[in-house]
Length: 95
Image 1 (tube, rainbow, N blue to C red):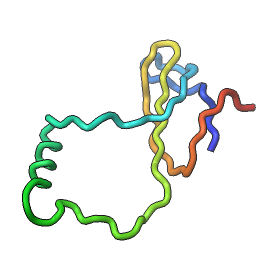
Image 2 (cartoon, rainbow, N blue to C red):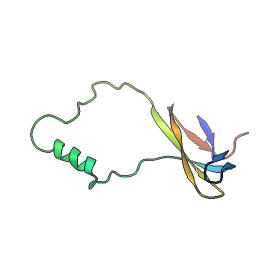
Image 3 (spheres, one colour):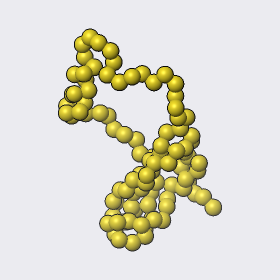
């Protein structure tokens, strides 16, 4: 799916429709000192089976892609809810 790199949409901070820059959201590195991650690593450690069962077969062929929209006026960033796509392409200008 092709998505334009600039979209005119509503900005909740400006409280009006403005031009937004479109980027693809990528999750950052996991924090090792976060409580959930410490708990996960502690459970993985030692003898015994794996904490979560290994997936035998793949259920889905696509991932949910999340769009990050940044307002060009105030710089406020909003996330557009993920949609299932095989390929996402951000193009310079759409007709």
